[in-house]
Structure formats: structure tokens, C-alpha cells
Length: 82
Image (cartoon, rainbow, N blue to C red; front, side, top):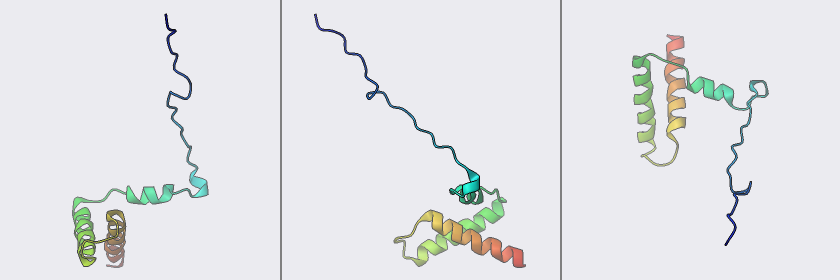
């Protein structure tokens, strides 16, 4: 009669968690900037501008995140001046 096979440690998956340290600047500040809440009107302006940036590239290359951040900088920068 064959013996039952026991699962080895290598067969089980282990989740590794890395603790973030905001003091060393490991990207948490950028994540906070993206998560800033805005009004629906402001968000729509940013969305529209990000889409315009996408169209200016002809829909090729780039990334939606970069378009969003650039549009947000343009829109929010204009509002602080006005």
C-alpha cells in the first residue's frame, strides 16, 4: 500500500509583505497625490484634458496614468493662479 504524500513547505505559497516607510521616500508620496479627492467637476476637467493628451499622441505610446497626472498638474496649476 503506497504512503500518502505530504505537502512540503515548498509546495505551499507564502505571502511576503514589505512594510513601507514613508520617511525614506519609497513612493508613498506619489500614491497620496494620486488619491487626493476632488470635486466631480474638477475630475471631469482632468479626464477631458487627459483624453486630449492621448489624442495628441495619436493614441500611441504613453500611459493613462502619466496623462492623468499631467492633466491634473495643468488643471490644478491653472486654478491656483486664477
